[in-house]
Image (cartoon, protein in one colour):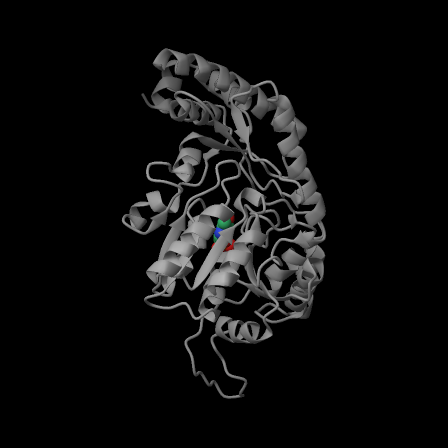
Length: 413
Ligand SMILES: *Cc1c(COP(=O)(O)O)cnc(C)c1O
């Protein structure tokens, strides 16, 4: 039945339609850009001075301000995306065809693409059951076994899942003993700390992301962070079309056009100034959910171990008990019906069609922690620009969805 047809037979329709549309609630998103107003001045400056390309004061400023913020004498390189940043790092580590690179299975695909770009093979590692992060004991087992079999990876990428830092010191220790380079994927954890150290400085190499859904954004962008001056010089050259320092265009190696623009770096400088506020608000959002559902015992939340401070980039809950998978689906559908964007936890890489048959190292045969977290996990709207009213709405609908799911779950058993 077409709208046109109906309105022609029922003159009340137009009015009723307008009313119902007016009542349709504003969509609540998972995580969207949150500008501060400080960005505009840097962007305007780029226009006023005509630094509108991939060099300029905003780029220098963004890189040095981020380095100062992270401390530990790190060097930084602003690039087009977090994925590009990881590509540069893995190449600097001489990853190539025939090599293996180990990586958390519970992550976004951006942690993995660069392994494929370089012709290497990813080896996926299962999660620790409480945080979903890499389990130091599992990493130790994996590396010991790989050393025996002669299949050690060249590098290991540790992802700080949803902004919660992985327990990186014992992982770094195991990597050092086996001569494996360690890379932090800190795309979701900028602003987090681990034993008093800033995320991105707890391993020799790290990458950040400023994609639109991250803690701070440049609309799209990323950064390499390292103390390794030699590697940094190589990465800077590759990212800039591998131009040799000569007036004429001289190239000795393959390059990429990975530089960030000076305009976008300006957005980054404004965003960096409010990073602490952004993290603070995401942590508040997390606490609001935790308080609201403190009475619901069968929900598992990501813990924040002592000595670690999470960004709470996304707040995720994992349903427990019988029928958790069906209840999870019900919760996602109910929230969507009320225009609330919630998502499953990352679909683990070893379950992706693309990676069928790829090596996967789990705790034990048949005990797939990452798969369990994926099947029963829900990521809730977590942006720093959510209002208290929007959060009330999410809490209200989530509570009702959980209650109904409970009934459905009980009926299904
Ligand atoms: C977002 C993200 C990336 C990729 O960053 P882009 O800037 O989108 O390329 C990599 N790893 C993780 C864990 C991410 O969340």
